[in-house]
Length: 362
Image (cartoon, helix red, strand yellow):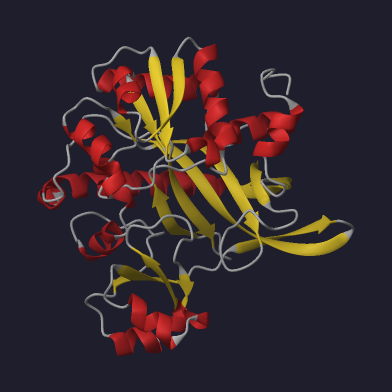
C-alpha cells in the first residue's frame, strides 16, 4: 500500500482475510440517509434519559463514571422493504471505522454520511483526550492479545494515522497497565464491557482510580449498548421512541410458553453480547437451547429481515443480504459501511461479501 509503506504485501496477506472486503457497493436512498440521522438523534435523547434515570443501577456495578464519551460507536440498521429503518444493535466498540475510510478512498467514492476523513477521525480522539484532562499527544490501543485479533490490521492503521498526525500510539495487551497510564486516552477494543472478568481486574482498578482513561468505557456501554437499554427504552414513556426501535422482551420476566409459541418471530441473544455471539433465530431454535437461555440474561427481539441486493459474482447471479453500520461520535453521523453476507447473521465468510461502501442515490 502506497499510503502505508510499512505494510509489506506479506504482512497484509497475513492480516486481511479473503472475504473481509466486498467488491460491491450498496445504493442508499438519500431519504434513508436523512432518516438515519433522525434516528440517531432520537437514540441520543434516549441515552440522556438513561443517564438521568438509571445512574443508580450503574453505580451498583462499582464502576467509575468518566467525563468523556466513546470513539467508534455504531448503530446497526436493517432497511425494510418500505425503506423503513430497523435497529439491530448499538455498539460502543465497533470495528472498521478507520478501514472504512480506506475502503471509500480505495474505490474513490465520496463519504455519503458527512465531511469526515482521517483528520476528523484523529480530532475525535483529541477531543476525548481534552475531556479527560490529558494532553493531545498519545494513544494506547488495547485488546486481549491484539495481534491475534481478526482485525489487527486496523490497529496498525490507527497507529500509523495517529503518528502521521503527531500523536504517539502504542498497541498493548489489556494487562499492560503502565503503558496505558502513560497514554492520554486508551482506545478500548476489549469486549469485557463491564470489566467484570478476573483477567480484567487490574484494568478495572486503574480505570476506577482515574489512572487509565478508556474510550469507549463501561459507562457509555451502560447508557446505550447494553441490551437491557432496549427493554428500558421500550417501557419508558417520557421520550419519543425512534421508529426504528423494535419490540424487545426480557426472558427473565416473560412467560416461557408465550415466548416459545412466538419464537418464529423472535431473535434471541444475550444482554451483554456483541455481534452474533450466542445469537439464535427463533425459527431454527431447539427446545433444549430455548430452555437453556430462558431467564439467563437473554432477550428476545422482534425479527428484522435484512434487505438484499442482486449482484453478479464469478459470472453467476446471486443475492447478498446486508445491514448498515452507521458510525457516530456523540450524536453526529460520521460514516456508513454496509456488511454483505449470506446466511442467518452477518459474517466475513461469504464469497463476494464483507464490508462494502454505500452510495447515495435519489
